[in-house]
Length: 179
Image 1 (tube, rainbow, N blue to C red):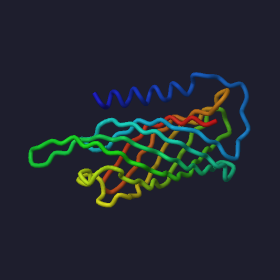
Image 2: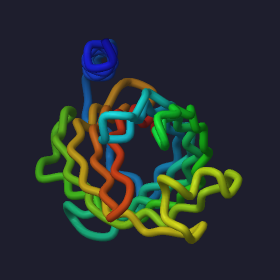
Image 3: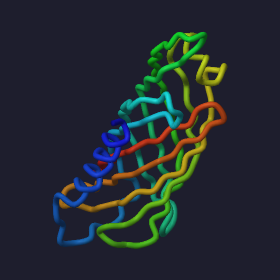
């Protein structure tokens, strides 16, 4: 059931990117601001769907390279089983991802590859330390694939991102809106 909902969200993200048409290619701005909506899931079998909200800024640093800074708040829930007792744990993560984006073409629809690090704070109580690292700050590594689509008034980028840490891994379906 979870996998089918996750696949439907991914399909909706990519279909939304082609909802509007733009006749001309807009010039590249030095800095673009926007916001992001995400569906996320921990990659272990106990993970459940969660969601994330955030803001982002893209800085154009080279012909095909961009530096992307983000502010992301994630709401995640999962089940933990200890001593034949299943406990539902809900946690809130605050992360500040810094990614390098590579956009190989200058087209209206442009594939993107991103990679970087996401310093992440666990804002929840100590009960969640059974699953997340014992320190409140951890540094997962991210890699993502997206499709940058210029529309008439804004740019939309559906993206799928895998975030890996030694004790917790996440899968994100992201929809970025940039002005």
